[in-house]
Length: 129
Image 1: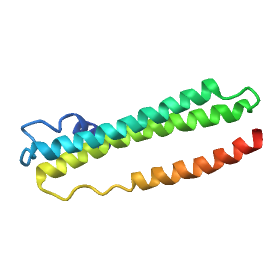
Image 2: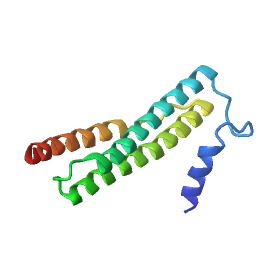
Image 3: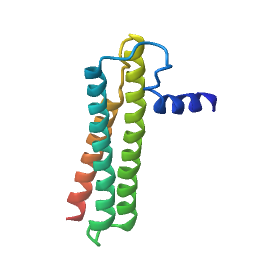
């Protein structure tokens, strides 16, 4: 639990001047923020897609499938948002301390999950059309 609280605290006090290290070059800090915002847009698109699936899939689709797809997209969007803020914070801290930027396998994992979901959805669409 202490590790979780430390991580959460790191998300909100990255710009605290009392933190160890040096203030990063603003250009790199702003680039990090733009990357964060791109991930947030991805998160919002996934959540919006989940809501659209819940509201607009045809009535001849099984209800359980509609709920499963919408829940999966909404939860994936939430995971992307959490990962976005965590990566932003870790990158900002690394820049402050002059360390290497954190490596993230999340984009590759997200791409694999979305590709597999797309193939599964294509199978479902051809089954119900």
